[in-house]
Image (cartoon, rainbow, N blue to C red; front, side, top):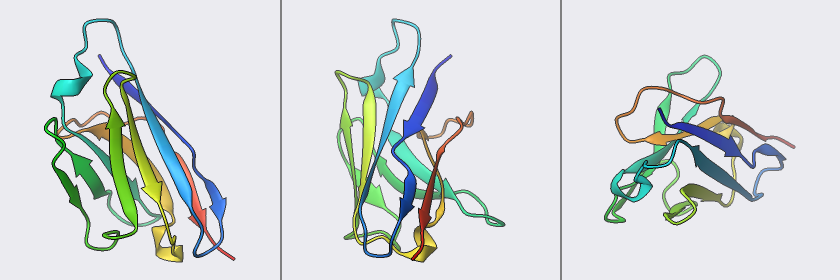
Length: 116
């Protein structure tokens, strides 16, 4: 069973920057590099939505609302995924989760709040 631990969230003003990190916590033998990974978010009262994904071959996909502002990256050696977020907006406020693409077991997430 693999678990993901997200970190890096916080309170930031509109226009600000945050970098989220996600570390895979798993028994040895988990081959992280073969899995597509993604960042997802859930705002209060809304369904969880895809923010950004990166396949095992490094093909990326972004939600229209974050294109040009967010960048997903991964470090396979460290079994980590990152989300660089620039020019944050109040509508980016949500709990952010990382997960393998298509996997339906979720971690605790990290809270991002964009407010002045």
